[in-house]
Length: 349
Ligand SMILES: NC(=O)c1ccc[n+]([C@@H]2O[C@H](COP(=O)([O-])OP(=O)(O)OC[C@H]3O[C@@H](n4cnc5c(N)ncnc54)[C@H](O)[C@@H]3O)[C@@H](O)[C@H]2O)c1
Image (cartoon, rainbow, N blue to C red):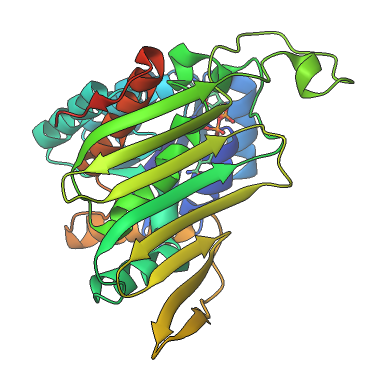
């Protein structure tokens, strides 16, 4: 197969740190063009990765460069329009998480993919970790028995991204830590459990650190918008009787940053804690705990980008499909609605 002509839309943190860094080392890819709405950022990325063409308008890049593969690593509100434009320009698209702001927008991306005949993968990099792959295989082997409850979360003590910028502006991000961090761990919980169908959600959100002074008494504050939550908690019921308890925060007065998934099974329990997997079971009345000796994780996004080009080469479906993101976005949407209404809401798929 000839090398895939590659371009990227959005050359910020994820664009450079994950996509360009990974695709620059991918043997199936030739870096052709970068695009960022801020010319200085596009030029800096082009220099850093030795890419000839730099654009500030993605439509112009798509028109001029005849690309085969495009990454979308912009703020969340640009994901759907940029992905659809790239699919219409006959490109395979690797779009960052969250797929978009609403389930309806993700469905419009799926419709554009189906019309184009190209592949669309979402950047759910946690699925590609050794801890997620091990846990999924362990669950699929029946080793936990029936999973009847799960818990997941990612809490930061002080970690609001880009305060006053697009992350904290609902119209651009879709929400705070629930959509930003929750999308990863709600997804990975669903993925490991085999995508049970969610039926109701109950959520609450809090915004206690929008005021720069409350966040840090010595802070000089910030300018810009802060209209999203900094903590979200919730509870999801699935059709098979299983439940999921969740919590995501960018800022809380807790000991330190912490991420986890816990699965409660009838035969055994499984806990993923900061990338370590532990199994808890019982043998003849004696508790038996074990830890998986996982291989060290590779660089951020490397396994995901290699998987994607392999899927393109072999004409296979990628494992992080937008259809599964509709499910995640329906859950997140229902949690935000529930927080607004102060009541449990139904999820209609
Ligand atoms: N999978 C992960 O681990 C991970 C980690 C961080 C961020 N992300 C996701 O990646 C995306 C980008 O996040 P980030 O942290 O890199 O943000 P960022 O602000 O660092 O970068 C976004 C870039 O997009 C550019 N941009 C904005 N509008 C544009 C447009 N219309 N056309 C071209 N460029 C445009 C901005 O100028 C900026 O350089 C987000 O969707 C975020 O959720 C994923």
